[in-house]
Length: 305
Length: 252
Image 1 (cartoon, rainbow over the protein chains, first blue to last red):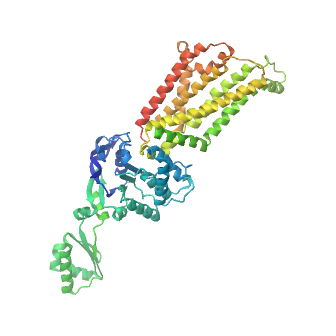
Image 2 (spheres, each protein chain N blue to C red):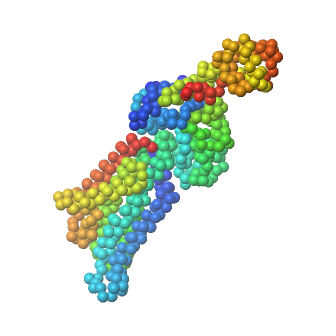
Image 3 (tube, rainbow over the protein chains, first blue to last red):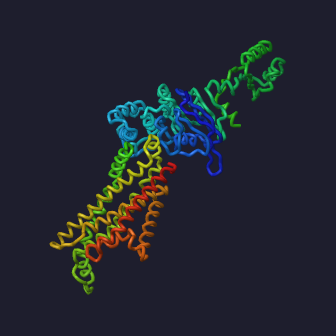
């Protein structure tokens, strides 16, 4: 089942199209990375899913119910963490969660119990000071706690790690991974290593459209190719290697850079056989041989070119 | 209803914590006490400063009420509007409402809760000021009997609701505090200007702030206040209604 389905979504601001016929589905139980450059329209899309922005066209379905602008009915299924969550400075974290609990309609006891549980999950269990004295990372963690209070089916996080230092980033990613067993997570980011670290699904937004989407391995298999890097001790050695007849067919797609050569292919094993055969025949000894895994980054750069 | 009650509580706490209520309460109380004091002792102070100045008749209790209406309708309500002018803009600029609205807080609950709290605080401050003037006046001019003292105060109190409704509408339309206050000031100015035009004057809510002393002195009758009261309440409700409608379409 899909928790979120977006069909033919379009949105323009003052004549400029930000989202252009976007289609996307988020399957239940996934950790979904929504990738795009700054200004690609990630936040705009998320705000439309939350009914905070009115789409020009298209349909958004959350848990089999259509989303209407200004209405909050479908938001009962969604927990939302904005990029920079802001709270009321004079409240303590537990008081803020109590306010949220009252709005949702939880009982006092339940709110308190769940609040304590969530605060310790995000590492704010013993924090008694008011939110006014919180760091950005702490606000982000409280943001996750408040988003999870409703036990949402879908947690939407808008660039949860972008503004954080490496320690804060790791903590947030760990929390997201921890909760992914109970909640579908959709998070936008432009940090690709975060996606590779915790996501199983991803979609790449470029110029208002999803240009690549699916499971992470699918994406890599479809759009990536493996590469073999060889580094030789001298230019002559590289030259000799390149002049071998068996290597010629591989050179069309190869990149040479100084004493390095990178061979690209969909059939890496075959390439390896050829290369090792040639190396054995010519008695050439490269100083480095490495198989380069297709990275999201190379894919990303390739796609937005 | 959950959302309304929760947000109401939050608003009450907030107005206590940021000293808004304390400041306003102090302002109204001080003006409540100052009104009879100034009415009673101003002539004496003035004659002490300028010995050759001719004083008119001795001050009476009615002068205290004249001061009260001048101060409260002017300074008191202005202070209220200025301090409450930021009630929405701070939420917009920080984005604090987004989290609560996406949690299912109905947008109109935000407007109603903000209005309710502003109205409660205005009522508390206003009547505290009134009681201060009332008691101090009774002390300074013992035995004076004035009619319609409460009725006259009741009408000015009603205008407070109208001002708050216009202010909230301004706060919903504009994102900045300053423009919201300017909007309220502008609308109030237009209403008071319309009060000068003769055929409209009899219906104008402005009458509720200008003829209170006449009511106490007997120069005006209660029946004159009827139409302006109805119109004032109507504008209050329409203003609030517009505010909720506009807020529904507002980008947070």
